[in-house]
Amino acid sequence: MSKTGESVHTTLERASARAWGIATGLVLGVGLFGATLWLVFKGGPDIGGHLGRLGQVFPGYDVSVRGAIFGFFYAFVVGYALGRVLAPRTPISLEERAAEREKHVRLNGKSWSLALGGLLGVVLCITTLALALRGGEHPGDLLEHAAIYFPGYTITPLGALIGGAYAFGVGWLAGHLIARVYNTTVVHAEEKIARA
Image 1: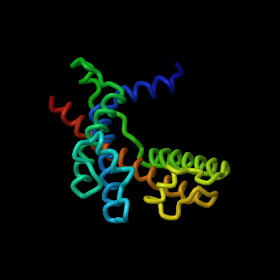
Image 2: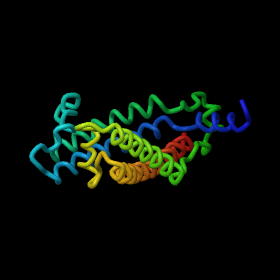
Image 3: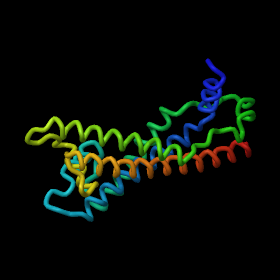
């Protein structure tokens, strides 16, 4: 392994699983909460026909203000569990803990925002273009529902650009949120370790 590879590996090992869990949980929770409230305030004849299906796995969830609160807690728990499982592990022994104080990795919000926004924007843009070029009577039945959250989005080349811009914005915001929550949680964890 190269020196850079070892450095990245060592840095990732220092990441706090709790911080990953809280950051992922908050992003998923706030995302579901916001999407639900958006549908509630937008209204319409078939309010949340697709998002409401989450009620099958999240008892008590529906597309309402009360459902948004339930959804936040359910999504937070799922995100927290995923963050804990997917995060690199911290050292266990007391000697390793003492050596690791104030050495946890910090996430660069700008880099995370650009990377996540770019990824989401490119994926939505390319997927939309592929569906538009494929054609047919209903080229993207499921993806057309993104217009609920992205006004002006359609399964057309212009819609691909509009959707890509919206997806970039969502990813950019999510990247900043993940980095901010993660970094704040790491600082609290380091202060706790320092007091131990």
